[in-house]
Every structure is written in C-alpha cells, then in structure tokens.
Length: 438
Image 1 (cartoon, one colour):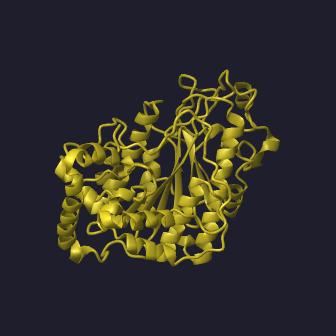
Image 2: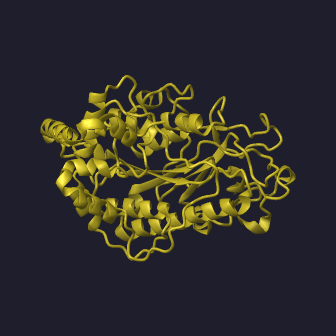
Image 3: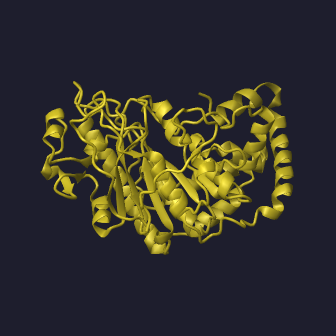
C-alpha cells in the first residue's frame, strides 16, 4: 500500500521532475489560496466549538482484558494463564472491572466522566487488520467506500472550513479522513512544509517539525509501544478518492499544504503547561493536541494512534503496559485541558479494529477476534457502562457476538457532540442513539 509520501516520491520526485514540483505545488497552492481567501475565516468552525479526539488502539485491543468480566467463570476457564483475577482489576460492579493498569480511567469512571460501550462491533466481522480497520474508518461494512466517516462529516457538516478542520498525527492520512472536498491535514508529512517554504528553507521547515514534535521540557524515556507483530499505522487508500487523478491528488496535497506552518507553530507555542507528559509517542501527540486546542486552532477533530495491540504472544505484560501508557497519556491530557479551561469542550473516543478471541492461545496470547469495548471520555460524556456485556458462552466461532453496532456510537458523537445535522449523508443510514453525551 503506497502512502502519499511514497506516491509523491516515486511518481513525481523521481527523474528530472524534482525541481519543478515545488514550483507547481506553490503555484497550485497560490491559486487555491486565492480562491479560498474569502472563506478562510472559519465561518463554520469557530474557536469555541466542541472537539472530538479519536484515539485508535491499533492492532486489535483485547476488550476482555480491558473491561474484565472477573466474576464470569467462563472467562477464567477460557484464559487459565492470562485472565485477570479480582485483585488485578478496578472493580466497576459485581461483574466487570477495569484492568488495574488504568487507575486514571477508573477515577474518571467513578466521577461520571467515562463511558464504556460494551460489545461493539459490526455484522459479519472480518478478522483482517486492514479490512476491519478500513470498515471502521469508512463506516462501510461492505468495505467499498472511497471516503471516510470523518471526511464525510467535514464535507457535509463543515462547508467553508479550511483543512485544519481535521488534523491527524499518523504517518499516513487516516482512511477516516478520506473526503470528496476536504480531507483535513496530516502533520507527520514534513515534505508538505518544505514545499511551502521552498527548497532553500528546508532546514527551517525541518526545524519547525522538530519543534512541533518536541514534548514539553520533562519527557521521560521514549519507549515505543510494542508487543505485537504488526506495526499498524492508520491505514488508508492512497488519495482517498476513487478515480482521483494525479493532478487532483497533487491539488489536494497542495490544499493540505496551505495550512500555514507559522500559524500552527505560533498557536501551539502559546500554551506552556506545567502538566507532566510521558515520552511515549501517544503522550507526545496528545501534548501537541492540547497545545493546539489552547492556542485556538479551529479544529473539530484530532486523530491520534496508539499501536502494538496485536498481542498474539505472551500478552499479559505487553497488554498491561500498553493500557498503562494509554492511561498515563490521558491523565496528562485531561489535566492539561482542565488547567487551560478547555476540558468541557473535548470528548475523546477510542476504537480498535476488533477484539481478541475469548480463549487464550498456546503462546499465552490471544488471536484476532470480533467485538470489543471502547471508551468515551470527557466532562460531556454520560458516564457508566453502555450496552450489555456480551455472553462468553453464546459465542460465534469462538468469538463474542457484538451487541452494539459501532455506527450507533459514531452517530452519537456526530449528532450529539459535533452537531452534524444529518446522519444519512455521513453514515449512510440512521442508527439507534445510545445517549452517550450529556
């Protein structure tokens, strides 16, 4: 699968075209900028609007060792080596508890600011990382859509917004951002900024990115999130639009690039926090999100990823560590938001492409499964458990059956939080509301 960067390197930057591309892009950018000058004032996406942060748990998070059915004998029977005992969990009720690696999320739950949706999935689930990720990102269970659910939100509910309506921190543009008009921007693409500044200012562009990605003064180690067999960036179909030609692709790249690096840096630099963030990639990215929110970016959706959840082997320690990194990063993020007075504007939603099988495997890990749980965090969230915990005895091919269609969750955050007026153009249909907000 080619990324945008791959495409540009191999298709355009190759051969003798290397020196013509920046000029072409700058020219295209200039034309687009001129055409968009009158709408770049954010008539739709004001700086005080609600914000959604989408956090991908890439690799297939084991929902049963995240929201643990500690009182279910079937759970302990299926997982004799990796099941969590009652002493290993943060008890939520007489049946389930949170993995003890997440004390902050446990406190959020008790304060009523964490909603946990149980048994989330979709009909006829696919255990492929890439297919299932694509289904979640496009909200199309047939996996035929060329656009993503967030991209369709940008197109249908945010007309006139500039590309910063959606910002991703992934290596590639997430498929969820695929759009006919406005696919948001991906900030891990420094080449875009080199083009803005021109080849003579390459060093400044790289310095900008180094500073943008620098955590605040007190980073700890830079331990990568590992534990799985798949490095799982948010997948994406190159370009995101079926039938998109090279020219249209470059124009869209240029449109992304019209985001002013100077403006972003100035806004992000406004906020200096005394909240301590870890040195993990997730914590760094959430630190950046926090700084951009504090700086007044008009962005409605931020997208970050936390990888390594493909836990086929010796799961217990790696999974606990990943959940601990998640918990620590969220603790810093929400403390930062509260300190800056923006905590009531932000809802964070996690998702993973699938859960794991009920039974552990011979390697003390778990293989690809189907339904899982997801979190909604923030002051506006209706806290508590949503849906019912799936049965561990009434299984489908060894997997739990989903009890909530993930598109119902999307419908809740789109309609009740982001105030999208209509669901059908975005999700293709109306789905039952779950009362997740308010």
